[in-house]
Every structure is written in C-alpha cells, then in structure tokens.
Image (cartoon, rainbow, N blue to C red):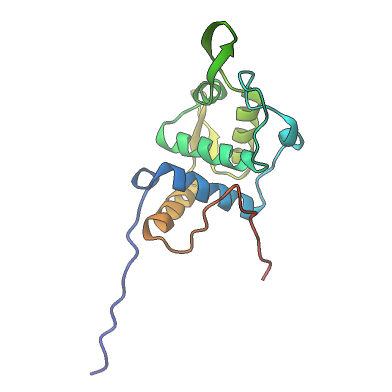
Length: 167
C-alpha cells in the first residue's frame, strides 16, 4: 500500500466573512489587473463631492471606489445612484456657519455602476436600482475565499505601484 494522500479543500468564504478594508483593496487590485474596467477620462481632475476641497491623492481611486460600490451592492441591494451618492457623502464645512451633510458626486456613482454593468457583475433591477449578478457574486466570493485562506492575494496599496507581469 502506497503513502496516504491527504487532499485539503479550501474552505469557502463570502464577502461577509472577511475584513472589508482588505476585501476592497484586493478587489480594487483585481479590477485594475483585469484591465476590463472602463475608467472615465476625467478621474484625474475631479473631486469626489462638493464638500471636498481637493481631489483624491491616489491616482487609482476609481478602482477603490468601484470595489467599495460593488461590495455595498453585495451587502444590501437593490441600490441606486442616489443611494450611492448618499453613502459616500460627508460633512460640508461652511466656515463659521454650521456644518451640514452633503451627498457625494452622483456622476462618479453613475459611472462606477455603469462600469460594473459592462463587466456583467451587476444588473438593473425591475423595481429600480442595481443588484449583483450570479457571476459577480462568484467573483466576489472567490476573492473573499482567497483573502480568508491567504493564498495568491495581492492587496492594493496606493503607495506601491501595481506591477502587472505579462508572462
């Protein structure tokens, strides 16, 4: 009788099982590496909301925002553009006057949802908003499983340039 071979199965994980910051960074790296996400031309010179003073420092912020958007759709759907603008909103400082809540840019929310629709990760819902597709759910769960098992995961670090090998 030969040696006994033990096959270890990877335990499945969902997006809810992993740390959200690690997941968003890993998904942003996946979206950038795939090269299929359509990034608008104006992302380098736009603020993310009227309550912001400066544009994002990270040149790849659109990938991170899109990863965060699809994670939110996974957790709670259907979600529309107006809801996404509300989620990413913040406090508008009015100088000596009181601060008030302000929504983020709806154009950024719209473009990220449209880019995810082109990747077939989300689709429009009949009652309005967007929901995640079965293919999108599989991709997100696969990335979550990789994070949970810590195999083959490259997290997206804004300070480090992402090197994509062609081999």
